[in-house]
Image 1 (cartoon, rainbow, N blue to C red):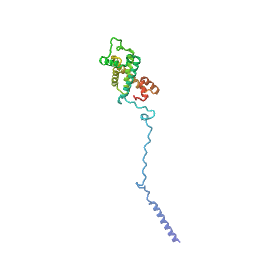
Image 2: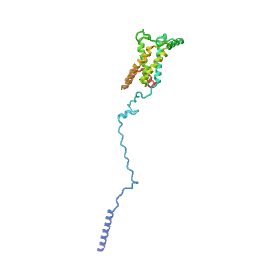
Image 3: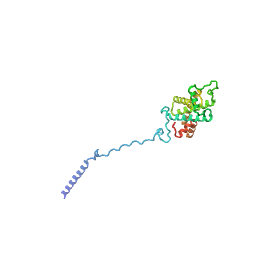
Image 4: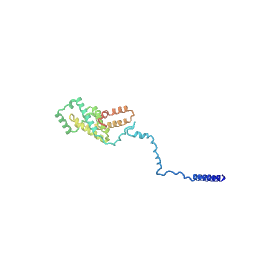
Length: 248
């Protein structure tokens, strides 16, 4: 009996030692191979902050953004609007002359037109130095000073509003004045030396003032006030642009 107890104690001691050794020598847990490990999560880009106010305002189509103005000289001049506009103004003015002064402007006989055109092409422009100032062509001074000044400014300003430079607009006004004197009016009266000089000169001064005022009106915040000022400065142009006929 004592021998059995001795053997049992020895077996228990061996089992205890074996169990303790296997626990001490257990292999450490290793990481899975690299090819089996899940890929690292990619870092997400930082959220974009709100756009700067200036960038939002300059983006085309952004609410409240104003259309970018065309810089002077950055676009080619538009020829059709000022030419068509000037021809229309000349035609209407010549028709009004025929109503107000039937003699000589309502005389449409071919022989009379032939006579007056021949006189215009064979004689120098009319200039009577014996007449008072601004009546050297026998016309009343309001017609010469006010009427021809407005006519010249309408020609000049239409060219300027369609991206003509100052020299080109002056040349356009000079050409338009000659067309009026030798084309539209020459079938009734002899061309006037005063009108040939004064019309484009006064037209350039008054037209440039109108052009500067029209551009300055673009800075008015109130849309009705801006439209009112521009309509006062350029009534015919605003009608044409509003009707979609021309864009300048």
